[in-house]
Image 1 (tube, rainbow, N blue to C red):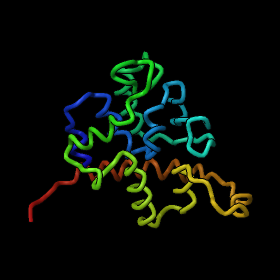
Image 2: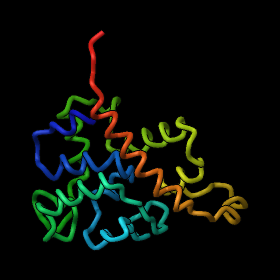
Image 3: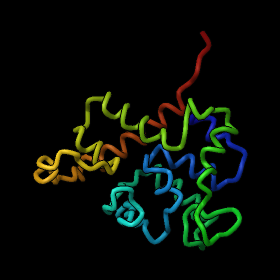
Amino acid sequence: MLRAIEGFSGHKTTQLALRLAPHVFVRPGELRHAEWAEIDWEKAIWSIPACKMKMRRAHKVPLSRQSLAILREVQIITGNCEYVFPGFQSLKRPMSENALNGALRRLGYSGDEMTSHGFRAMASTLLNEMGKWHPDAIERQLAHVESDGVRRAYARGEYWDERIKMMQEWSDYLDQLRDRKVTAG
């Protein structure tokens, strides 16, 4: 799928959004509503304000080298817009809600096989299976809130340093998957 995304022949900003999605594994609406003002290039952090988050809590996404490179590609196209991924009809609005899923369908993936939200489940599953990362660090990166009220009151750690390392290693892993030679049989 990562190779198919690289070869996507539709709109370039859609392809770049699809390329970025597995690296940052935010909710599709958060990706579509990303604004250039939220990107801190120096610190390699995307700061998503609470008003854009499902749980209404501000969220920070450590940006890997690969994520920054993709954003630099997008910046050439949309850097003078408010939104990183503006709509096709109006640059003053974010990309359509259906753009990424539509692109996945054009690439041959049915809704049962992959959705733009599916990058989150993929990352969560594989990062947990690796056994290298604290489950709470993965949950924080997914912007999930602890459902147990008592635990939530005491477990306030953000696992920031671990998340920075995890996001870079995750992007490196995605590159390895994309670049792996496929052999028949």
